Image (cartoon, rainbow, N blue to C red; front, side):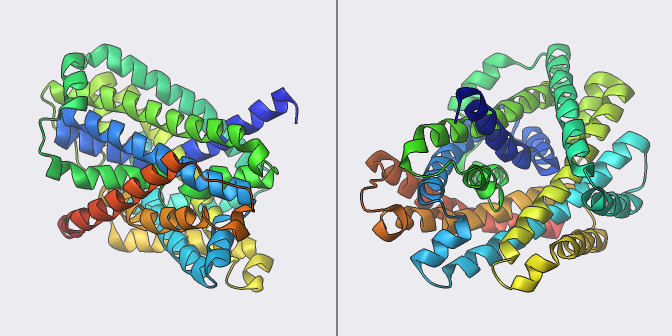
Length: 401
Protein backbone atom coordinates (compact mmCIF):
# COMPACT_ATOMS: atom_id res chain seq x y z
CA UNK A 1 0.00 0.00 0.00
CA UNK A 2 1.53 3.34 -1.04
CA UNK A 3 1.82 6.25 1.38
CA UNK A 4 -0.95 8.37 -0.18
CA UNK A 5 -3.41 5.47 -0.22
CA UNK A 6 -2.44 4.53 3.35
CA UNK A 7 -2.97 8.07 4.65
CA UNK A 8 -6.32 8.33 2.84
CA UNK A 9 -7.46 5.02 4.33
CA UNK A 10 -6.35 6.01 7.83
CA UNK A 11 -8.19 9.32 7.54
CA UNK A 12 -11.30 7.57 6.20
CA UNK A 13 -11.40 5.07 9.10
CA UNK A 14 -10.67 7.79 11.68
CA UNK A 15 -13.39 10.04 10.26
CA UNK A 16 -15.85 7.12 10.22
CA UNK A 17 -15.24 6.59 13.93
CA UNK A 18 -15.31 10.32 14.70
CA UNK A 19 -18.41 11.12 12.62
CA UNK A 20 -20.18 8.11 14.15
CA UNK A 21 -19.48 9.72 17.53
CA UNK A 22 -20.18 13.35 16.54
CA UNK A 23 -23.91 12.99 16.01
CA UNK A 24 -26.92 14.70 17.57
CA UNK A 25 -26.35 12.89 20.88
CA UNK A 26 -22.79 14.19 21.03
CA UNK A 27 -23.96 17.77 20.49
CA UNK A 28 -26.86 17.57 22.94
CA UNK A 29 -24.87 15.77 25.66
CA UNK A 30 -22.05 18.30 25.48
CA UNK A 31 -24.37 21.31 25.69
CA UNK A 32 -26.51 19.79 28.45
CA UNK A 33 -23.60 18.81 30.69
CA UNK A 34 -21.80 22.11 30.09
CA UNK A 35 -24.94 23.89 31.25
CA UNK A 36 -25.15 21.87 34.46
CA UNK A 37 -21.45 21.33 35.30
CA UNK A 38 -19.97 24.58 33.94
CA UNK A 39 -16.14 24.49 33.92
CA UNK A 40 -15.98 21.06 35.59
CA UNK A 41 -17.13 19.54 32.31
CA UNK A 42 -13.58 20.10 31.05
CA UNK A 43 -12.47 17.41 33.52
CA UNK A 44 -15.13 15.06 32.12
CA UNK A 45 -13.88 15.65 28.56
CA UNK A 46 -10.23 14.97 29.42
CA UNK A 47 -11.08 11.89 31.48
CA UNK A 48 -13.40 10.38 28.88
CA UNK A 49 -10.90 11.11 26.06
CA UNK A 50 -8.12 9.25 27.88
CA UNK A 51 -10.41 6.30 28.64
CA UNK A 52 -11.71 6.26 25.05
CA UNK A 53 -8.18 6.12 23.65
CA UNK A 54 -7.28 3.13 25.84
CA UNK A 55 -10.50 1.37 24.78
CA UNK A 56 -9.91 2.02 21.07
CA UNK A 57 -6.26 0.94 21.13
CA UNK A 58 -7.15 -2.35 22.83
CA UNK A 59 -10.19 -3.22 20.72
CA UNK A 60 -8.83 -2.07 17.35
CA UNK A 61 -5.53 -3.87 17.94
CA UNK A 62 -7.27 -7.20 18.65
CA UNK A 63 -9.71 -6.90 15.74
CA UNK A 64 -7.15 -5.78 13.14
CA UNK A 65 -4.40 -8.25 14.08
CA UNK A 66 -6.88 -11.15 14.12
CA UNK A 67 -8.62 -9.86 11.00
CA UNK A 68 -11.96 -10.72 12.63
CA UNK A 69 -14.99 -8.53 13.26
CA UNK A 70 -16.08 -7.93 16.85
CA UNK A 71 -18.81 -10.58 16.93
CA UNK A 72 -16.52 -13.15 15.27
CA UNK A 73 -13.78 -12.57 17.87
CA UNK A 74 -16.36 -13.15 20.61
CA UNK A 75 -17.64 -16.37 19.00
CA UNK A 76 -14.09 -17.69 18.59
CA UNK A 77 -13.44 -16.93 22.24
CA UNK A 78 -16.60 -18.61 23.48
CA UNK A 79 -19.20 -20.12 21.13
CA UNK A 80 -22.38 -18.10 21.44
CA UNK A 81 -20.72 -15.05 23.00
CA UNK A 82 -20.69 -13.33 19.60
CA UNK A 83 -24.47 -13.58 19.44
CA UNK A 84 -24.72 -11.96 22.88
CA UNK A 85 -22.34 -9.16 21.86
CA UNK A 86 -24.30 -8.68 18.62
CA UNK A 87 -27.55 -8.50 20.59
CA UNK A 88 -26.13 -5.84 22.92
CA UNK A 89 -24.72 -3.80 20.03
CA UNK A 90 -28.03 -3.96 18.14
CA UNK A 91 -30.02 -2.92 21.25
CA UNK A 92 -27.51 -0.11 21.85
CA UNK A 93 -27.77 0.89 18.19
CA UNK A 94 -31.55 0.95 18.46
CA UNK A 95 -31.40 3.23 21.51
CA UNK A 96 -28.92 5.46 19.65
CA UNK A 97 -31.17 5.49 16.60
CA UNK A 98 -34.28 6.44 18.54
CA UNK A 99 -32.31 9.39 19.91
CA UNK A 100 -30.95 10.20 16.43
CA UNK A 101 -34.50 10.48 15.07
CA UNK A 102 -35.24 12.84 17.96
CA UNK A 103 -32.12 14.82 17.05
CA UNK A 104 -33.47 15.25 13.52
CA UNK A 105 -36.70 16.67 14.97
CA UNK A 106 -34.66 19.11 17.10
CA UNK A 107 -32.81 20.18 13.96
CA UNK A 108 -36.05 20.64 12.01
CA UNK A 109 -37.49 22.71 14.85
CA UNK A 110 -34.46 25.00 15.08
CA UNK A 111 -34.15 25.30 11.31
CA UNK A 112 -37.80 25.75 10.28
CA UNK A 113 -39.86 25.79 13.47
CA UNK A 114 -41.51 22.44 12.62
CA UNK A 115 -43.18 20.76 15.67
CA UNK A 116 -41.31 17.81 17.19
CA UNK A 117 -43.97 15.17 16.41
CA UNK A 118 -43.96 16.09 12.71
CA UNK A 119 -40.15 16.27 12.79
CA UNK A 120 -39.84 12.66 14.00
CA UNK A 121 -41.73 11.26 11.02
CA UNK A 122 -40.05 13.61 8.53
CA UNK A 123 -36.63 12.54 9.80
CA UNK A 124 -37.54 8.84 9.65
CA UNK A 125 -39.04 9.12 6.15
CA UNK A 126 -36.12 11.15 4.77
CA UNK A 127 -33.61 8.73 6.32
CA UNK A 128 -35.28 5.75 4.62
CA UNK A 129 -35.44 7.69 1.33
CA UNK A 130 -31.74 8.60 1.56
CA UNK A 131 -30.85 4.97 2.26
CA UNK A 132 -32.95 3.58 -0.62
CA UNK A 133 -31.90 6.15 -3.24
CA UNK A 134 -28.89 5.24 -5.34
CA UNK A 135 -25.79 7.26 -4.35
CA UNK A 136 -27.94 9.44 -2.05
CA UNK A 137 -25.91 8.41 0.98
CA UNK A 138 -22.64 9.45 -0.68
CA UNK A 139 -24.16 12.83 -1.54
CA UNK A 140 -25.41 13.17 2.03
CA UNK A 141 -21.95 12.28 3.39
CA UNK A 142 -20.38 15.00 1.26
CA UNK A 143 -23.02 17.48 2.44
CA UNK A 144 -22.37 16.59 6.08
CA UNK A 145 -18.63 17.18 5.62
CA UNK A 146 -19.38 20.66 4.30
CA UNK A 147 -21.81 21.29 7.16
CA UNK A 148 -19.26 19.94 9.65
CA UNK A 149 -16.85 22.64 8.48
CA UNK A 150 -19.65 25.22 8.90
CA UNK A 151 -20.30 23.89 12.41
CA UNK A 152 -16.62 24.18 13.34
CA UNK A 153 -16.51 27.73 11.99
CA UNK A 154 -19.70 28.59 13.92
CA UNK A 155 -18.12 27.22 17.11
CA UNK A 156 -14.96 29.27 16.62
CA UNK A 157 -17.00 32.41 15.93
CA UNK A 158 -19.11 31.78 19.06
CA UNK A 159 -15.96 31.29 21.16
CA UNK A 160 -14.62 34.67 20.01
CA UNK A 161 -18.01 36.32 20.63
CA UNK A 162 -18.72 34.94 24.11
CA UNK A 163 -15.08 34.71 25.30
CA UNK A 164 -15.28 31.83 27.80
CA UNK A 165 -13.21 32.35 31.00
CA UNK A 166 -10.15 30.27 30.01
CA UNK A 167 -8.58 30.50 33.47
CA UNK A 168 -11.60 28.71 34.90
CA UNK A 169 -11.52 26.17 32.06
CA UNK A 170 -7.87 25.21 32.68
CA UNK A 171 -8.26 25.10 36.45
CA UNK A 172 -11.47 23.07 36.53
CA UNK A 173 -10.32 20.68 33.81
CA UNK A 174 -7.67 19.46 36.27
CA UNK A 175 -9.25 20.31 39.65
CA UNK A 176 -13.04 20.27 39.18
CA UNK A 177 -15.12 22.21 41.69
CA UNK A 178 -18.00 19.78 41.15
CA UNK A 179 -17.91 16.73 43.50
CA UNK A 180 -16.45 13.69 41.70
CA UNK A 181 -19.58 11.66 42.47
CA UNK A 182 -21.55 14.09 40.29
CA UNK A 183 -19.20 13.43 37.36
CA UNK A 184 -19.70 9.63 37.16
CA UNK A 185 -22.84 9.83 35.02
CA UNK A 186 -21.41 12.40 32.57
CA UNK A 187 -18.17 10.41 32.15
CA UNK A 188 -19.94 7.10 31.35
CA UNK A 189 -22.39 8.94 29.06
CA UNK A 190 -19.67 10.72 27.08
CA UNK A 191 -17.53 7.56 26.95
CA UNK A 192 -20.51 5.56 25.68
CA UNK A 193 -21.28 8.25 23.11
CA UNK A 194 -17.66 8.23 21.87
CA UNK A 195 -16.64 4.55 21.89
CA UNK A 196 -19.76 2.71 23.09
CA UNK A 197 -21.90 0.23 21.17
CA UNK A 198 -21.45 0.07 17.40
CA UNK A 199 -19.14 3.14 17.37
CA UNK A 200 -16.39 1.03 18.98
CA UNK A 201 -16.25 -1.18 15.92
CA UNK A 202 -16.97 1.30 13.11
CA UNK A 203 -13.41 2.35 12.25
CA UNK A 204 -11.83 -1.04 12.97
CA UNK A 205 -14.28 -2.84 10.71
CA UNK A 206 -13.46 -0.28 7.99
CA UNK A 207 -9.76 -1.18 8.29
CA UNK A 208 -10.57 -4.91 8.21
CA UNK A 209 -12.66 -4.43 5.05
CA UNK A 210 -9.62 -2.72 3.49
CA UNK A 211 -7.35 -5.62 4.55
CA UNK A 212 -5.34 -3.51 7.00
CA UNK A 213 -4.84 -6.57 9.18
CA UNK A 214 -2.12 -8.60 10.90
CA UNK A 215 0.68 -7.38 13.11
CA UNK A 216 2.66 -5.69 10.34
CA UNK A 217 -0.02 -2.99 10.06
CA UNK A 218 -0.20 -2.17 13.79
CA UNK A 219 1.51 1.26 13.45
CA UNK A 220 -1.21 2.29 10.98
CA UNK A 221 -3.96 0.93 13.26
CA UNK A 222 -2.55 2.81 16.27
CA UNK A 223 -2.29 6.12 14.38
CA UNK A 224 -5.85 5.75 13.06
CA UNK A 225 -7.28 5.05 16.53
CA UNK A 226 -5.48 8.08 18.00
CA UNK A 227 -6.65 10.23 15.09
CA UNK A 228 -10.29 9.16 15.51
CA UNK A 229 -10.42 9.89 19.24
CA UNK A 230 -8.45 13.11 18.69
CA UNK A 231 -10.89 14.48 16.08
CA UNK A 232 -13.94 13.70 18.26
CA UNK A 233 -12.27 15.27 21.32
CA UNK A 234 -11.29 18.43 19.42
CA UNK A 235 -14.90 18.97 18.30
CA UNK A 236 -16.14 18.36 21.85
CA UNK A 237 -13.64 20.85 23.32
CA UNK A 238 -14.65 23.55 20.83
CA UNK A 239 -18.36 22.99 21.52
CA UNK A 240 -17.70 23.01 25.27
CA UNK A 241 -15.87 26.34 25.06
CA UNK A 242 -18.63 27.85 22.90
CA UNK A 243 -21.43 26.73 25.24
CA UNK A 244 -19.49 27.50 28.43
CA UNK A 245 -18.96 31.07 27.29
CA UNK A 246 -22.74 31.40 26.97
CA UNK A 247 -23.65 29.84 30.35
CA UNK A 248 -20.78 31.63 32.13
CA UNK A 249 -22.51 34.86 31.10
CA UNK A 250 -25.53 33.80 33.16
CA UNK A 251 -27.78 32.32 30.46
CA UNK A 252 -29.77 29.18 31.35
CA UNK A 253 -29.99 26.88 28.32
CA UNK A 254 -33.32 25.67 27.00
CA UNK A 255 -33.41 21.99 28.16
CA UNK A 256 -35.48 20.95 25.12
CA UNK A 257 -32.65 21.85 22.69
CA UNK A 258 -29.61 23.10 24.68
CA UNK A 259 -27.02 23.06 21.86
CA UNK A 260 -29.12 25.10 19.42
CA UNK A 261 -30.12 27.51 22.20
CA UNK A 262 -26.45 28.30 22.95
CA UNK A 263 -25.86 29.26 19.31
CA UNK A 264 -29.05 31.34 19.29
CA UNK A 265 -27.85 33.36 22.30
CA UNK A 266 -24.41 33.93 20.77
CA UNK A 267 -25.25 34.50 17.10
CA UNK A 268 -28.97 35.25 17.02
CA UNK A 269 -31.48 33.71 14.63
CA UNK A 270 -28.93 33.11 11.85
CA UNK A 271 -26.70 31.04 14.14
CA UNK A 272 -29.78 29.20 15.43
CA UNK A 273 -31.01 28.30 11.93
CA UNK A 274 -27.56 27.25 10.70
CA UNK A 275 -27.03 25.04 13.74
CA UNK A 276 -30.48 23.51 13.14
CA UNK A 277 -29.37 22.58 9.61
CA UNK A 278 -26.15 21.00 10.94
CA UNK A 279 -28.04 19.10 13.65
CA UNK A 280 -30.64 17.81 11.17
CA UNK A 281 -28.00 16.64 8.65
CA UNK A 282 -25.91 14.97 11.36
CA UNK A 283 -29.07 13.23 12.58
CA UNK A 284 -30.09 11.81 9.18
CA UNK A 285 -26.62 10.41 8.45
CA UNK A 286 -26.42 9.05 12.02
CA UNK A 287 -29.83 7.37 11.63
CA UNK A 288 -28.76 5.66 8.41
CA UNK A 289 -25.25 4.83 9.70
CA UNK A 290 -26.45 3.42 13.03
CA UNK A 291 -29.17 1.35 11.32
CA UNK A 292 -26.74 0.00 8.70
CA UNK A 293 -24.08 -0.95 11.28
CA UNK A 294 -26.58 -2.43 13.75
CA UNK A 295 -28.17 -4.61 11.07
CA UNK A 296 -24.69 -5.77 10.02
CA UNK A 297 -24.49 -7.37 13.48
CA UNK A 298 -27.97 -8.88 13.03
CA UNK A 299 -26.64 -10.85 10.06
CA UNK A 300 -24.97 -13.10 12.62
CA UNK A 301 -28.37 -14.46 13.62
CA UNK A 302 -29.86 -15.60 10.29
CA UNK A 303 -28.93 -15.67 6.60
CA UNK A 304 -32.34 -14.26 5.57
CA UNK A 305 -31.43 -10.96 7.24
CA UNK A 306 -28.50 -10.56 4.85
CA UNK A 307 -30.69 -11.43 1.86
CA UNK A 308 -33.25 -8.79 2.85
CA UNK A 309 -30.80 -6.31 4.34
CA UNK A 310 -32.28 -3.27 2.60
CA UNK A 311 -35.77 -3.89 4.00
CA UNK A 312 -34.52 -4.84 7.45
CA UNK A 313 -32.62 -1.54 7.68
CA UNK A 314 -35.70 0.39 6.52
CA UNK A 315 -37.82 -1.42 9.12
CA UNK A 316 -35.18 -0.65 11.78
CA UNK A 317 -35.41 3.07 10.97
CA UNK A 318 -39.23 2.99 10.88
CA UNK A 319 -39.39 1.22 14.25
CA UNK A 320 -36.96 3.77 15.77
CA UNK A 321 -39.19 6.57 14.48
CA UNK A 322 -42.37 5.10 15.97
CA UNK A 323 -40.73 4.54 19.37
CA UNK A 324 -39.38 8.11 19.37
CA UNK A 325 -42.85 9.47 18.57
CA UNK A 326 -44.35 7.43 21.42
CA UNK A 327 -41.71 8.38 23.99
CA UNK A 328 -41.09 12.04 23.11
CA UNK A 329 -38.43 14.28 24.74
CA UNK A 330 -35.55 13.75 22.27
CA UNK A 331 -32.97 15.73 24.29
CA UNK A 332 -33.29 13.35 27.25
CA UNK A 333 -33.18 10.25 25.02
CA UNK A 334 -30.02 11.46 23.29
CA UNK A 335 -28.30 11.58 26.69
CA UNK A 336 -29.73 8.20 27.78
CA UNK A 337 -28.44 6.65 24.52
CA UNK A 338 -24.84 7.53 25.39
CA UNK A 339 -25.24 6.29 28.97
CA UNK A 340 -26.81 3.00 27.84
CA UNK A 341 -24.00 2.32 25.37
CA UNK A 342 -21.52 3.12 28.13
CA UNK A 343 -23.00 0.19 30.06
CA UNK A 344 -22.34 -2.10 27.05
CA UNK A 345 -18.69 -1.03 26.81
CA UNK A 346 -17.31 -3.29 29.60
CA UNK A 347 -18.62 -6.37 27.75
CA UNK A 348 -16.97 -5.49 24.42
CA UNK A 349 -13.73 -4.31 26.04
CA UNK A 350 -13.56 -7.33 28.36
CA UNK A 351 -14.09 -9.70 25.43
CA UNK A 352 -11.19 -8.16 23.49
CA UNK A 353 -8.86 -8.13 26.52
CA UNK A 354 -9.39 -11.87 27.03
CA UNK A 355 -9.08 -12.50 23.27
CA UNK A 356 -5.74 -10.63 23.22
CA UNK A 357 -4.26 -13.55 25.21
CA UNK A 358 -5.65 -16.27 22.94
CA UNK A 359 -3.10 -17.74 20.54
CA UNK A 360 -5.94 -19.35 18.57
CA UNK A 361 -7.34 -15.89 17.80
CA UNK A 362 -4.22 -13.71 17.72
CA UNK A 363 -1.63 -16.15 16.41
CA UNK A 364 1.27 -17.97 18.05
CA UNK A 365 3.74 -15.07 18.08
CA UNK A 366 1.52 -12.14 19.02
CA UNK A 367 2.09 -10.41 22.36
CA UNK A 368 -0.32 -7.76 23.58
CA UNK A 369 1.63 -4.88 25.21
CA UNK A 370 1.59 -5.20 29.01
CA UNK A 371 0.88 -1.48 29.52
CA UNK A 372 -2.14 -1.71 27.22
CA UNK A 373 -3.46 -4.79 29.03
CA UNK A 374 -3.05 -3.17 32.45
CA UNK A 375 -4.63 0.14 31.45
CA UNK A 376 -7.37 -1.78 29.64
CA UNK A 377 -8.15 -3.77 32.79
CA UNK A 378 -8.13 -0.51 34.75
CA UNK A 379 -10.64 1.05 32.34
CA UNK A 380 -12.75 -2.13 32.44
CA UNK A 381 -12.99 -2.01 36.24
CA UNK A 382 -13.63 1.73 36.17
CA UNK A 383 -16.39 1.49 33.54
CA UNK A 384 -18.13 -1.26 35.52
CA UNK A 385 -17.94 0.89 38.66
CA UNK A 386 -19.06 4.06 36.84
CA UNK A 387 -21.84 2.11 35.14
CA UNK A 388 -23.18 0.84 38.47
CA UNK A 389 -22.90 4.30 40.02
CA UNK A 390 -24.56 5.92 37.00
CA UNK A 391 -27.46 3.48 36.69
CA UNK A 392 -29.53 5.44 39.18
CA UNK A 393 -28.83 8.61 37.17
CA UNK A 394 -30.12 6.94 33.98
CA UNK A 395 -33.35 5.87 35.70
CA UNK A 396 -33.81 9.34 37.23
CA UNK A 397 -33.26 11.01 33.86
CA UNK A 398 -35.83 8.76 32.18
CA UNK A 399 -38.38 9.35 34.94
CA UNK A 400 -37.90 13.10 34.98
CA UNK A 401 -37.89 13.24 31.17
